[in-house]
Length: 116
Image (cartoon, rainbow, N blue to C red; front, top):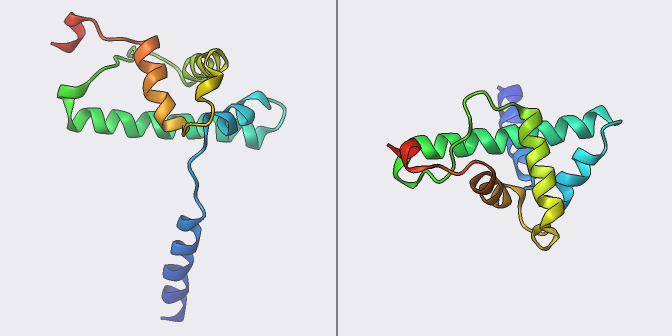
């Protein structure tokens, strides 16, 4: 029983330490391709944000404003995101998950046929 209580309390302490990354912080992880951990954070965070937005779009399909290609890769999404952030330094202070929407809308807009 003590173990269950400890795990329950421990789970709350780890959740509270999770922070959203700004575009600047995410970009700094992605620029460090030598450090496997940082590069893993770069890819993992982007895939988490991407998965979250796919889930939301599935729930509210009326508001779909980006159409990712079916075979888009994580490498492509990272490259597109890095390029956009470097071209929009005024947005680096925003949470990456907010910038992600702008990035994907610009890189992969839906045409009228895609929305049907």
